[in-house]
Length: 180
Image (cartoon, rainbow, N blue to C red; front, top):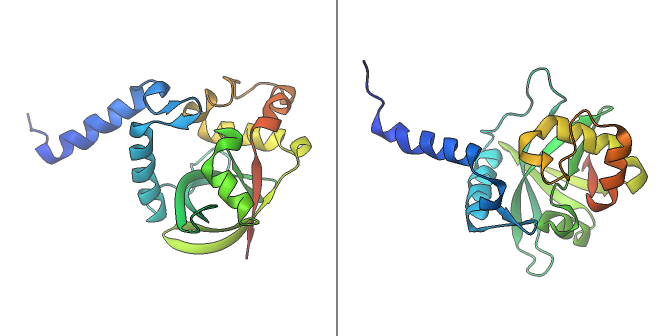
């Protein structure tokens, strides 16, 4: 029997721990914990470098990217890992943590000016979607992200009726991604 190289043990154990750890390890009161911030930094780096998948076969188009916004107070570039989803040919970002997400507050303060990084840099404008139009986008987003998002969206099932998504739409900002 072959032995696993020691260099692979820590990353594999870490990934398994992340997958099976309860959400409370990474988020408390809809804010990332210290462990959550560390994981988010690692995912942001990987997404910005283009190492995350841009789409999964058989699922709605979408992918994990790094979103760069200007800090609303500091003016410094701030990067966040986010997942985009495609609905009716348009690309969208959904805030799973709601109104308090830093990237949402920064995007609003910058009038939607942002940069997407996934290997390359793409300047974009984020246009907020009215509450009445968010439900089908949030449903597609949940279908795309599933396990990592379901609890943040109130435990709604992927196949729940659109009315359930309409109920939570006011708490979860949605932005359409427009190329600049």
